[in-house]
Amino acid sequence: MMPIIHDIPKAELHLHIEGSLEPELMFALAQRNHVQLPYGSVDEIRSAYQFHNLQSFLDLYYAGMSVLLTEQDFYDLTWAYLQKAASQTVKHTEIFFDPQAHTDRGLAFETVHDGIVRALTDAKTQLGLSSQLIMCFNRHLSPESAMDTLHQALSYKDTIVAVGLDSSELDYPPSLFQAVFEKALEEGFLTVAHAGEEGPPEYIWQAIRLLKVSRIDHGVRCIEDPALVDYLAETQIPLTVCPLSNIKLCVFDRMADHNLKQLLDRGLCVTVNSDDPSYFGGYILENYQAVQSALNLSQADLLQLAQNSFQAAFLDELQKQSYL
Ligand code: ADE
Ligand code: ZN
Image (tube, rainbow, N blue to C red; front, side):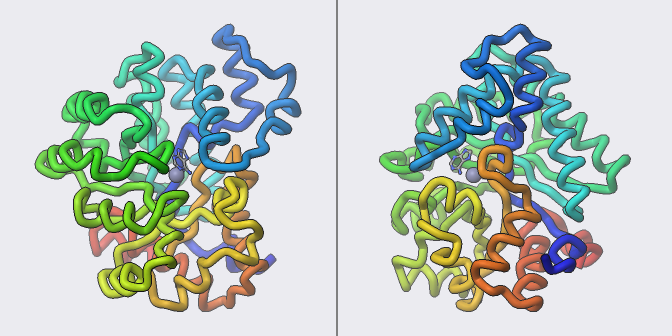
């Protein structure tokens, strides 16, 4: 391993907090909350994590969340991720959460939000790790449900910096959510969206033009549209790429086939992130290592990726400079 991968300060910008739920914690929370899991052991949970596309993962991802019930559960989940991130020299992290996946099970928005934010606050003081919180709308649910969720978030503008769009991509174009994103922008939220993970380049264009995103989450299918690649290079709209996720969900067959290096060489603002580390077999460090060895990245490439991560973060210029 190149020690620089561990040692360089990094920002993580694409991390679903519910996707950091390790089997051990899932099991412990199931016992604490008297929730029945369809698994008999931690090993059984791990061996169920074999995916052939995004949907096959999402089915287990949403099922796993059934153990999260109290504010303390969300604190414990978030704190575990933050400790791990800090141990890998992550200095700043921007965390997604999926409120609808919890409010649809009867939990209060506040329970989810408060547990996460309490851990983020502790991380700043105890780990020197800064953060932002991004609320995602699930695109398999209706635009009306997204609008309702946005209304609930209006009381939390101090702690939620942006809204995002995640979950099943194919057949759910960004255009469905244009009105919700317009309202979010009016209310002062920044916007991001998953696009071009499984979906076509057209969904990336829609995210840019209709949802006015500051970053594209994934975006790897941009490569199929040369005009889009040119546009991303020119505007420096960042891509939050998640290499291990892309392999686990069969977006690319092998890491050697991943287009991260191509996009980096083309001058795009590419970043490396872990997406759902518990499900995909690695945190940010393992993601950097996997692309470094499969794509033969140089030290300069690695430094560029880390620098991009701060450049692309929702931090002001002064804060960015303090990390670079
Ligand atoms: N939710 C959690 N991980 C996701 C991913 N990789 N794509 C879309 N939605 C998600
Ligand atoms: Zn994601």
